[in-house]
Image 1 (tube, rainbow, N blue to C red):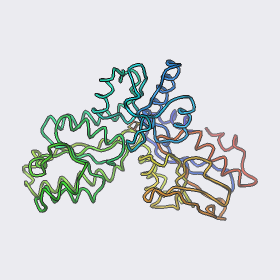
Image 2 (cartoon, rainbow, N blue to C red):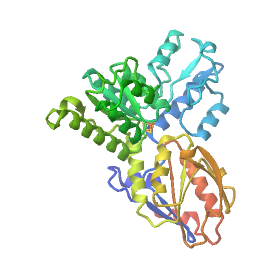
Image 3 (cartoon, rainbow, N blue to C red):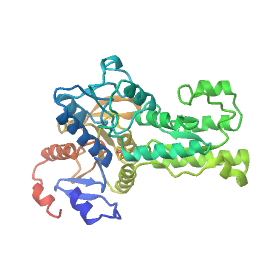
Image 4 (cartoon, protein in one colour):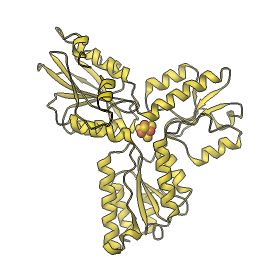
Amino acid sequence: MKESRRLKDLRKQDFLPTLLDFGPLQFFIPRHFGFCYGVENAIEISYRALEENTGKNVYLLSQMIHNQEVNSDLQNRGIKFIMDTDGSHFVPWNKIGKDDVVIIPAFGTTLEIEKLLLAKGVDVQKYNTTCPFVEKVWNRAEKLGKDNFTVIIHGKPKHEETRATFSHSSGNGHSIVVRDMDDTIELSNYILGSKTPAEFYEAFAGKYSTGFSPEQHLQRVGVVNQTTMLASETQAIADFIRQVMITKFGAAEIKNHFADTRDTLCYATNDNQDSTYELLKEKADLAIVVGGYNSSNTSHIVELCERNFPTYFINSDQEIKSNEEIQHFIYNRKELITTFSFLPEKRPLKIVLTSGASCPDTVVDRVMLKLVSFFSQTNPIDEVLAAY
Ligand code: SF4
């Protein structure tokens, strides 16, 4: 179905969801969902690294992508993770030497880690799976730094990609990370001088580049983002900062103080978010979003679905225990909970089903088929998919 729609709409003009009608159960599937170019590429390179290096230690700097199934499969085939997603080590650096293979994940890595590996004689380019859309953000940040703008990175401070972008961008100028609008409002106090530098260093501890002076380095700024943030949030943050700069320096001077960069979301995040907005127009009874629990882009799809539907964020079909019970993740509390009677009695029952950029489509298939198995007298799958 996905491939058929792709071929019929190569220029991506049509963002309407597909209705899969099983009779008593109907699914709304978004036009775009699941695996992106960067993830497919990274997985392909990782399997190749394993094939080409039998007998060697093959390490991944951290989780390849934020998907437990894919990561477990890679581990079962012999790949070892050096670090956890938050940077704590499974394998200490002193265990890694020049004969080992190290794969750089799709989010990229920091300049510091790259240097450390190069110093050990490890080839960091051969299996570098850094997504070109992440590199594009680094290039944008580099250009801002060279033009003497401080880079404000809208991202999750602990996310590997934001850490990598921060490191690359700090190589060319000053940088600071804001997680959300609250952080941005706090930052505006230091742009306008209504709070002291001492308060700045406390409020933004660990989120600014070495030598950052709030008095000097908030005079010229530009905004980039982690590629998987919510587009509307980044836009709101950029608009807010622009307005703050106008308040401080006047509209006539804005070009000297605010670099008008467009958001740096990747195409997959944009397509998946735009398709989710179309899903929100449907009259569905609930939504199921499939993806890794630490996946940023999936969490934003969940956030959007929650605006209109009771939403269940699951990482695989295993979380659906029965037609009565589902285990699902509450992203903002980082908590797995169980909900009973999650499928209303209504017929046909209408379910929005989607997934994040790090979720294989086979997992979505399994979720769909498991749900269908709870219903009797459903239309056969060949018939449901006949149009595709
Ligand atoms: S979500 Fe976007 S930036 Fe991240 S790996 Fe996929 S295509 Fe690349």
